[in-house]
Image 1 (cartoon, rainbow, N blue to C red):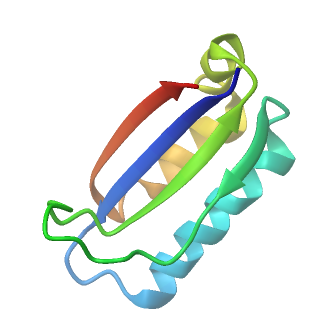
Image 2 (cartoon, one colour):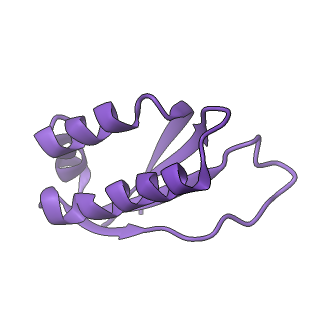
Length: 98
Protein backbone atom coordinates (compact mmCIF):
# COMPACT_ATOMS: atom_id res chain seq x y z
CA UNK A 1 0.00 0.00 0.00
CA UNK A 2 1.13 3.54 -0.77
CA UNK A 3 -0.25 6.85 0.44
CA UNK A 4 -0.12 9.80 -1.95
CA UNK A 5 -0.15 13.24 -0.33
CA UNK A 6 -1.09 15.61 -3.15
CA UNK A 7 -0.50 19.32 -2.56
CA UNK A 8 -1.78 21.97 -4.98
CA UNK A 9 -0.97 25.64 -4.54
CA UNK A 10 -1.97 29.09 -5.73
CA UNK A 11 0.66 31.79 -5.35
CA UNK A 12 0.10 35.32 -4.11
CA UNK A 13 -0.30 37.87 -6.91
CA UNK A 14 3.06 39.18 -8.06
CA UNK A 15 5.11 36.19 -6.96
CA UNK A 16 7.98 35.89 -9.42
CA UNK A 17 8.97 32.81 -11.38
CA UNK A 18 12.20 32.77 -9.40
CA UNK A 19 10.25 32.57 -6.13
CA UNK A 20 8.03 29.82 -7.54
CA UNK A 21 11.16 27.91 -8.51
CA UNK A 22 12.48 28.38 -4.94
CA UNK A 23 9.19 26.91 -3.62
CA UNK A 24 9.67 23.84 -5.81
CA UNK A 25 13.26 23.51 -4.60
CA UNK A 26 12.21 23.74 -0.95
CA UNK A 27 9.66 20.99 -1.54
CA UNK A 28 12.22 18.82 -3.31
CA UNK A 29 14.49 18.98 -0.25
CA UNK A 30 11.88 17.53 2.11
CA UNK A 31 12.55 13.84 1.32
CA UNK A 32 16.16 14.26 2.44
CA UNK A 33 14.99 15.88 5.68
CA UNK A 34 11.93 13.80 6.59
CA UNK A 35 12.57 10.04 6.58
CA UNK A 36 8.88 9.13 6.26
CA UNK A 37 8.76 10.62 2.74
CA UNK A 38 9.68 7.81 0.35
CA UNK A 39 9.46 9.82 -2.86
CA UNK A 40 8.42 13.22 -4.17
CA UNK A 41 7.21 13.97 -7.69
CA UNK A 42 7.02 17.35 -9.39
CA UNK A 43 6.48 18.34 -12.97
CA UNK A 44 5.27 20.92 -15.41
CA UNK A 45 1.60 21.83 -15.06
CA UNK A 46 -0.58 21.09 -18.04
CA UNK A 47 -3.43 23.63 -18.09
CA UNK A 48 -6.88 22.08 -17.85
CA UNK A 49 -10.31 23.74 -18.16
CA UNK A 50 -11.25 22.44 -14.69
CA UNK A 51 -7.99 23.20 -12.85
CA UNK A 52 -9.74 25.97 -10.84
CA UNK A 53 -6.66 28.18 -10.99
CA UNK A 54 -4.31 25.86 -9.11
CA UNK A 55 -0.85 26.84 -10.30
CA UNK A 56 1.54 24.14 -9.13
CA UNK A 57 1.70 20.98 -7.13
CA UNK A 58 3.72 18.14 -5.70
CA UNK A 59 2.97 14.52 -4.87
CA UNK A 60 4.58 12.97 -1.81
CA UNK A 61 4.73 9.18 -1.41
CA UNK A 62 4.47 7.51 2.00
CA UNK A 63 4.46 3.83 2.90
CA UNK A 64 1.34 4.15 5.07
CA UNK A 65 -1.00 6.52 6.85
CA UNK A 66 1.06 6.41 10.05
CA UNK A 67 4.08 7.79 8.17
CA UNK A 68 1.92 10.52 6.64
CA UNK A 69 0.66 11.52 10.08
CA UNK A 70 4.23 11.52 11.45
CA UNK A 71 5.23 13.91 8.66
CA UNK A 72 2.76 16.65 9.60
CA UNK A 73 4.40 17.70 12.92
CA UNK A 74 7.98 17.02 11.75
CA UNK A 75 10.10 20.15 12.43
CA UNK A 76 11.39 20.34 8.84
CA UNK A 77 7.85 20.15 7.48
CA UNK A 78 6.75 22.87 9.89
CA UNK A 79 9.70 25.05 8.84
CA UNK A 80 8.75 24.52 5.19
CA UNK A 81 5.16 25.58 5.88
CA UNK A 82 6.34 28.70 7.69
CA UNK A 83 8.77 29.59 4.87
CA UNK A 84 6.02 29.23 2.25
CA UNK A 85 3.26 31.08 4.09
CA UNK A 86 4.01 34.52 2.66
CA UNK A 87 4.06 33.42 -0.99
CA UNK A 88 1.01 31.14 -1.05
CA UNK A 89 -2.49 32.51 -1.49
CA UNK A 90 -4.09 29.09 -1.06
CA UNK A 91 -3.30 25.40 -0.93
CA UNK A 92 -5.22 22.18 -0.92
CA UNK A 93 -4.02 18.80 0.28
CA UNK A 94 -5.59 15.53 -0.79
CA UNK A 95 -4.48 12.14 0.46
CA UNK A 96 -5.08 8.82 -1.32
CA UNK A 97 -4.34 5.35 -0.04
CA UNK A 98 -3.65 3.11 -3.02
